[in-house]
Amino acid sequence: MEALDKIKRISKDPYSYALNLKQATGKPVIGNFCSYTPEELIYAAGGIPFRLFGTKDDISMADAHLQAYCCSLVRGGLEDALNGNLSFLDGTVFPHTCDSIQRLSDIWRLNADFAFHIDVVLPVKLDTESAKIYMVDVINGFKKNLEAALNITITRENLTKSIIVYNRIRKMLGEIYEIRSNSPDSISAADVYHIIKASMVMERDELLELLIKLLDELKNKATGSTLDTKNKKRIMLSGGICNHPDIYTALEESGAEVIWDDLCTGSRYFEGEINETGGPIEAIADRYLTRIVCPAKHMGMTVRGESLVHQAKKHDAAGVIFLLLKFCDPHAFDYPYLKQFLDDAGIPSILLEVEEQLPSDGQLKTRFETFVDMLD
Amino acid sequence: MITAGIDIGSITAKAAISQDGKILGSRVMFTGYNAVQAGKNVIEELTKEIGIPMEKIEAVVATGYGRNSVAFATRAITEITCHGVGAHFLNPDIRFIIDIGGQDSKVIRIDEQGKVVDFAMNDKCAAGTGRFLEVMARALEVDLDGFGKICLQADTPSKISSICTVFAESEVISLISKGETRENIIAGIHESVASRVSALAKRVGVMEPVMMTGGVAKNIGAVRALEAKLETTIQVSEYAQVNGAIGAAILAGREI
Image (cartoon, rainbow over all chains, first blue to last red; front, side, top):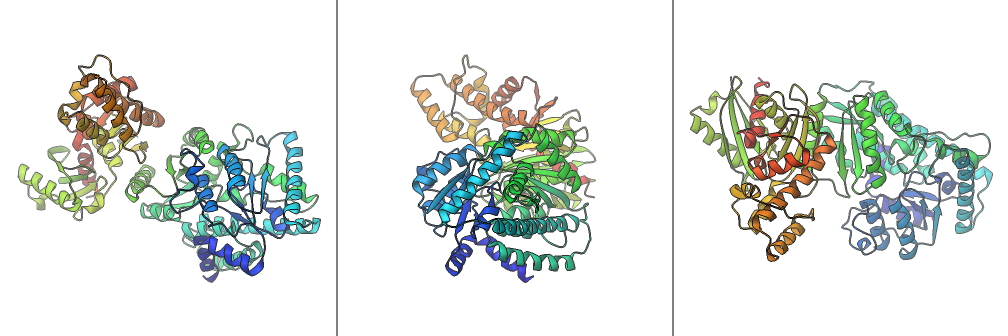
């Protein structure tokens, strides 16, 4: 599968991909840490939204600026910004999410040397009338900031095209996830991980072409055979970012297959379609207001818990693994609440806290194997 | 039907042999550097001791962190599942297990069949483990076997506020230099372990009756401190340290 091989290469080394792309096209590459980044505007401005995942290197420079209780994403992201690994970035966008990301934005602005820096101060409570008006204002403001930073004008045509491209990409990512859920033999969980990761860093026109090819190949290959659930348990991951392809293989070796997720770097990235008719800014704002929330946002008391249970049931997950970054307080605060929803629905779950490196293989397998025993 | 369970822990290797729902014997030895050898030695010594040749053993389940180093095992099963089955075998009423071993602590909730319903493990940290107690016993020059009993003579247990083992050791050293009694310091150390482990237990939700397993269950100070923190009585079987191996031996019977 040629398209998949290319995607895996990019996912495994996104920095080299971005460097080459920058040299070849001169397009602005714009970093971000969050699936609430209004990427549609960056694409409309001719830029490449580039998701940052932290670092796999040792963290030393960043810790001069951050406390030890910051998550490895924040510390690792800053490390790469300070040590020059992100030299291909033209600028960075910080949507308002958790406290650590807010403070990282200030530290980044003062210490990392990129041409521009934009804060997107999104509403937090999304289910109010005032949030709707405010969200449109914020996205209009982001558009002006981007235009000023890149010295361009984002036209209505640019925006309309961007919405169409993003809808197509997100729809195809959803289809790939559905193929994985319906016919797990067709594509491995680790491959799906590589596809979604590459989707967050690639030049989106190139991505679109690759996804079309990939989906064609997959549809031809899809066996329609369901998982042998006697020997393999269907598992769903829930949490923030996942930058650990090894988790999928460790789970497989323990007798489980990830068939769906509720991750920021997963289904939350592609969920929700943008209305292609009407005002483009309003339509984009509407998607960010109505997509499944992350714990840094609010949309009523029960929405997140109900949505998790709904997804687990829809995809016939025997259990849920909460994959949380250590020191990620929004996710940690939501964990007991979400676990209660799963308990009430009779869906077993376990909590796994990870940092830039996974726990030792032994500890990981002990948890996974016991969890699989529990599901028998 | 004779079956065996072998539990290769970070500090000790345990073996148990069972016949038709009865424990024929058990054995504990140090794991040392070579987990493969430890697995062979512990079962060899036990078979010699109880006079049952290896060939008579129909199935072996290996457990513990070194469970995959036991080449002759029929199957490897995690120690969490095994402790659930072991505790259920020793007392079918048990619903909650606290297993404190050498390198980690685990809390396990089980159902009326001894099957794991929920569990939690401590993360990347020696606090709340047997190793923490070992380090402290060394700092206070007390033999590990007597370490727990000394707590019972404390009048006002010291406060150990550091969670980190290394920093807690510094705290203990400064308490020694302040002239605090050994009894009070040791009681404080056990309260500190109990605080860590009870927090983990409350996360999963304690259900009575509670049993403690693993090597640290032999330490009366740790058991009493946990009982106080959890406001419950904790059962400790004479087989506490080999409970994982017993569970493995029982599970081996289901492999046939």
